[in-house]
Image 1 (cartoon, rainbow, N blue to C red):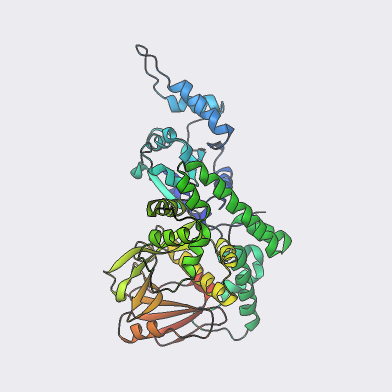
Image 2: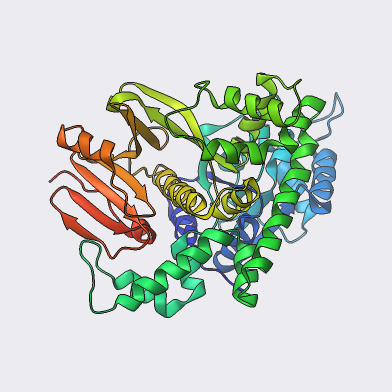
Length: 458
């Protein structure tokens, strides 16, 4: 089953860019990196060389490279050992514009990762490198050639991508709905979209989970696949941990992160994610865990694309910005799974899932080319209360307050900040609504956020 991904257009942009670079594809395990780059390569190049450093093809290529790069003192040095290695690995290899070379799981070889500059500058063939655990390249053996690399992150499927695969007719109606006012002629469309969004919130966007749901129409079967993905990630990640304390933290970290999500949102008591996490882990599992071990585990999850960080703007002062003051999971299916295991009631789960969905969407808008400012999505405190998110377009001075609501509650703090000129607009994101505009306040069905564009200066 082919799941259409919008990232395909970005791959084409890279191919057609006259400024040559090696394409680095990153993203969490099982988000579909290998599938989409192979499909792209097969459809856009005459010849493909695929090497996975996790399996035998990687071992075979490293043997070829070792053979062609060996040098005996007193003899001529090999002039083109990498070219020779590719020729030895694949007899049909030709170094030209119609050849693409893919190194999957590049983080498994510092030696090859450090050749990225040579890939870009000394070959006519195009190179794509991928990694699920690129946090490993922060180790001293890895050198990063920033000027020779174009980086592209692949996320799990967005709601729009899920919806198009789920029901193409409903997807077309979704794309035609007005954003600024309700379409009263078709109330059933809003109900159908809300139902689809509820399904998406429970299974998330990992391709295997989505495929399973589309084939079986069973949320339970899709969640079974999601559990398998979680286990794959845990088992593979443990390969990179050598300290028993790190392993102890890592195996117990997910539910602790979920409990942090469920806490009151006035900011963490310890004012640090790693300190708050340490307190939870030591309380629930072991009293011997250090803050450093918690920090390493959190950093690994972040670098591996499993969690993302959210900043905090204190008293609506954008110059008083505290990074990494909250964390979210990078897939709603994982969020739902651990929320369910934490014992949270249904309204709490829905509210947390909706907020997590908005976080992921805002984070995507900070990928290049950036749409919104700040180094990460941010929430804010103001006059003893909290505002879910603060957003400002990179092309605008118009500041938005975003409130994520699952019921009829009003955003008292956000309304106060709006009235006192701390922002120009308030955006309500709700589940059961058709949307509308009332002066500076806009209301939008939460599932329409992916179509929403933050206003530019006139």
